[in-house]
Amino acid sequence: MDASIEGDGDVTAVGDPVAEAPRPAVPATAPVRDAAAARARLWRTISVRLARAQRTVQRTVQSHLSSSLTRRIVVLNLGGLVALLAGFLYLNQFREGLIDARVQSLQTQGEIIAAAVAASATVDTDAISIDPEKLLKLAPGESASGAEGGSPLEFSLNPERVGPLLRRLVSPTRLRARIYDRDGFLLLDSRSVSGRSNILRFELPPAAGQPTTLDASSFLERSLEFVQRLSHRPELPLYEDIGMGNGKAYPEVGSALDGHIHSVVRANASGETIISVAVPVQRFRSVRGALLLSTMGGDIDAVIVTERWGIIRIFLVSAGVMLLISLFFTNTITEPMRRLAEAAERVRRGVKSRQEIPDFSDRPDEIGHLSGALRDMTKALYNRIDAIEHFAADVAHELKNPLTSLRSAVETLPIAKTEESRDRLLAIIKHDVGRLDRLISDISDASRLDAELARADMDVVDLAAALSTVVDLARAVDRGDGVNIQLAVRSSPYDAPRSRWRVLGNDSRLGQVFNNLIDNGRSFSKPGGVVRVLLWPERAKGPGGQQIEGYEIIVDDDGPGIPDGAFDRIFERFYTDRPEHGFGQNSGLGLSISRQIIEAHGGRIRALNRTRAHPQGTDEPRPGDAVLGARFVVWLPSAR
Image (cartoon, rainbow, N blue to C red; front, side, top):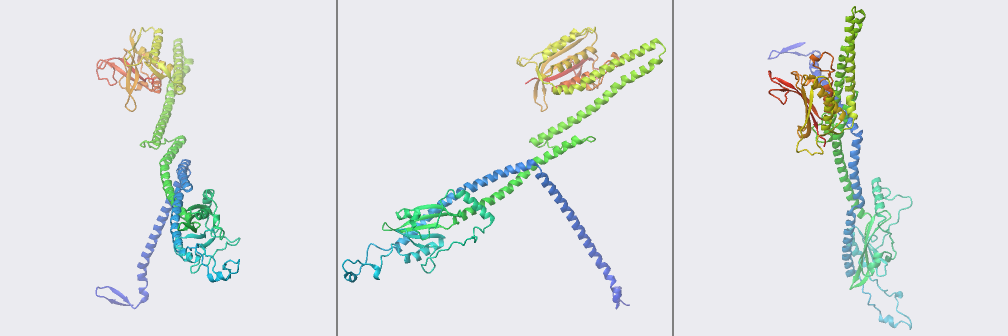
């Protein structure tokens, strides 16, 4: 291989084609392969995206079409549009207006053509020309006649003059013109007059079995013509072409020969509208014949079909717009409802996880209201599930303590050596059995409370009478503590006497709440103390901030008060704080049941401490502020 050194120091091989071949091949094929691979990857990416988009569109269409609500909305919207289209096509005032305008136009044209014919093509038949020489040659009793080569009497209208004139006036108008003499005989027919002569031409009817143009027309045209027959044929008389027959068979021709302009609208056997107008041909007020102008079959219907096609096109566009609007409208309804239904189904099936309901509460319509209601219902359901779980755990815990104590006492009793030990163990067993009895009774009452409140009918309850009854019963029970129970009722001058102290509720359950609060205050009072019960009208703020009329029941005692930080805890199940009363004397469910009953009646209950700085009660007492006693405040809305 020869090599040459160029000016820049590069070495180039010369004269060895074998050595030059592989060197350019390597860099030339690599970019081609990379470009082909890039194009293949691009096509795969595009095809994957198109497939995904197609599947998304299919799912969207299927979800919309599978929704009965979507179908109903679309059918109702399009049904009104179809009814409007049918009314336009059937009633169609345009047709009547078009026929009236065409009749007026034919009358005007007929008067112009009849005047031209009368001026240039009439013959004066009142003067008869007789040759005197022929008259002298007649034999006695013989009359002058044209049979021997003489000129016969001329027509009232000269066909030789009428033909060219009629051809020039009628040919551009696509009308059929027929001239009848005063006796009703056909003189000329524009459809049968040739261009250069007055030869009459008549088209033969199609042979039997050979399809006409109408029979070979499209299905849509046949459908429209069928509709035309249904809507037009019963209204219009049938048109029949009499050909060379006497023109008086047409009423309008007979009226024209009497000197009147007359028009008739008919329909031929194909359902096509034909308008005929007959105008008298007069000269010096003498009727010389009649001109019959008629439209060609299908001229009026072609205009009407064109107009109806315009209406149909407008309908198709409107139907498309209506369909899109309906789909958009239903999408704003069915899609949220579908999501809400699926979420509700997931909530029903979901056992291990908590499902979230879609939030459409920002929509100011029924969908937003439904979404908010479902979310609140789901939240209440989960809260109820949590409450049941906690209640079960609390019940298990509270029952386990006396059972454990009872088991220990029973196991220890056989090995007790002294009578004193056995008596002490029997006392423990008796105490634990009583505790279990109280717990089971209170737990049973608490578990039945929701169901009873849901089933019970709310009646009008007189709070003053209910409190008076509860206080009287509490006074009648002598516990040996000397606690006095006082009841005060403060009425408002603004309350009507008939609606005063009336609330909607269950009187037995409200009485249970009042009895629990009075017993609670009595149990914490010192011997000879006082429990004060006050009833008065009081307004409270509702959920929207509006003022709601109601009544407040306040129960005060002079006991040690409520421990700091326990103002809300005392309403929890099984909570009790009575160190001076001994262990296990209370189940701790009374205040929890009371709050549950009050909230079921749409009210609220809270606990406060009366102090020297806040004699009306506070739940945030200051350190060092002397406690005067506890206060429980119950508010219930008044009956409307």
